[in-house]
Image (tube, rainbow, N blue to C red; front, side, top):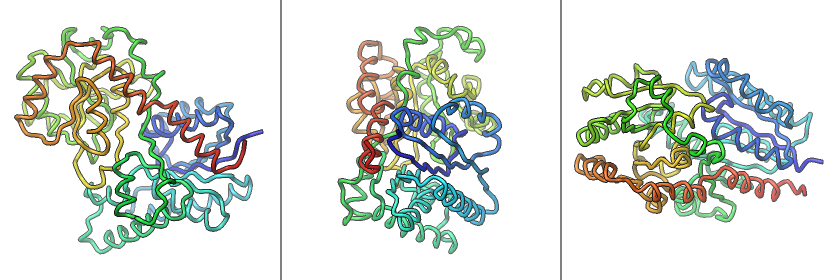
Length: 411
């Protein structure tokens, strides 16, 4: 007997890096607790070719059934409408065959179908919002509100956001500050008790510093890094939100204080999108760029002495919870970041981690001096224990399982 049959819909792909870190690990954990999943996802063709077999291996012999379409990008707007049509059509077809107990919608595009299911079939609906998506499109310069079409689309999704919040049985927010914004400004009439905070989590068993007790000499050689290198590290795509120039400026400041400093990017972003910025600062010979798979990531993270990420400050980013934060801390790597979402409140509890309010040279200089003075490994290792209380995947799975149980009425 199962605990419930879940339709999980994501406009992100299971073969995306995000799918590997923030979709499948949760679903695999929940399947172990007796839930059956049908997943609808939209895959990018190049990533699908690389990671399809890995996903199939992960879900083999599990009560997880994967249905996918290829994501369409062009022409703008029309391609998304086409994907939404396909999503709704497949979801309804599966519903007729399987009669789901719960619809779990990941972000806004999927929630359009979740809202439809709630109204048409009366199926409990989780709005796993992930962030203020429509505002992210504007803040990230993807939707220019001076364009009448994008202004209309933005207004459409802000109205839909109200309906998602109203009709969803449960709303998942990544941050406390986003919940506060929903309750105080976006929808004061909402029942705040149905909003749960579950930040982006990571698998502390997979990201285990003790599994790689020292820097791997083979990997250092592969990356042409000296054994005494002090390595500043960035993890993940650069994308719309990450401030590459500011991170390079920080490295320049660090380099002045530490002659053997190097900057390692573990990223799928092509080198030709990173090196031009490094060349502006004449630091390209100290930059290393490597694409690593999800399974390879912990070993390469072990090379890093200090993690860094700076995110473009904006209204929508109050709802963000960067996965890289959890992965750095799980590997006992202290972090320098900037104040978005709940990070400032979290970093205040973490020894030798720094959350910046600005990107001034004096701020960079002060933090770099503190970084180079850090030699208390015992204090740094406390980061992992403190982070586990916030970011542990097992804890997140338990939270989702409790929500599922409350909505499916299955013991």
